[in-house]
Each structure stands twice: as C-alpha cells, then as structure tokens.
Amino acid sequence: MLVASMNPCPCGYYGSNIHECTCSPQAISRYMNKVSGPLIDRIDIQIQVQNLKYEKLQNNNSETSNQIRKRVTQARLIQLNRYKNESIFFNSALTPKLIERYCKIDNESKKILEIAFNKLGLSARAHSRILKVARTIADLEKKKNIEKTHVIEAISYRSLDRRN
Image (cartoon, rainbow, N blue to C red; front, top):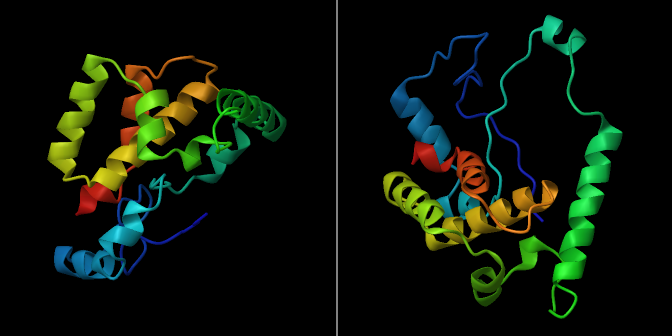
C-alpha cells in the first residue's frame, strides 16, 4: 500500500480557495515532474483537498467516524464474500482477468471512461485502477453493479493525471 501526500506546487497554494498561488506554470510543471508518472499511476485516489475556513469546521454535518467505519466494514464483507473462491480478498488485488469478471460496466460508462482515457492520456494501469475504485464505490453504496456515477466519481479521483 502506498500513501502519499504532496503539495501541487512549490508554494503549496495551487488551487487554494484562500491563498493565491505565486508559482509560474513552468515552476508547477517542474515541481510535478519530480514525481514520476509511473509512481503517480500507482496511487489509486488522487484528490486535491481545499483549505477550510473555521466556520465550516463548526457547521460540520457530515458522517461520523463510526458511520464511515460501519460502511467500510460492510464493503469489506461484501468483497470478502465476492472473492471467497478467488485467491484475493479485496478489490485492490484484482488482476486484469478478475477486473474483467468483477468490474463490468455498461456501454454509457465505457464511453465515459474512453473519453476520460483519451482526454487525460491515462495509462492502462490508471484505467484498471479507475475500475477498481469504481467497484469499491459501488460496494460502499451496497450496489451489485458498477453504475455510471461510480465510474465518474472514480475518474474524478485522478486529479494528478489532469496535470500531465
């Protein structure tokens, strides 16, 4: 498992809704090029987290940690049951052959993925990771099939691909 956290630019404010980024496009490109494409490719979920104002923290109406833990535990059980006759336990370990079997998507979702693949210049590895993440999103929602919204959400988690 690889966990990574990084600023998107030298000043650390690229895309911030609070501070203005002072970096030139060339400086951002040089900074991002320090992290190799194959390494970025191996990160399943790549999102940019915005700074929060204090007021937002006080008006937090999101899920509690216990609610999230319960959903994750249920998704893990779904995966354990799905793969009980395979040599894996979770979506992250899906091989290309198993992706084909367990990550089926409809034609509309395939078209969306094709557009993203071509527009973002995604690799085969990124394509597979998007399908695995979409499968996990569906599991978190207790959905048997991967739906178009799951594919779109999984694509949205590839923010570092958009910078290449």
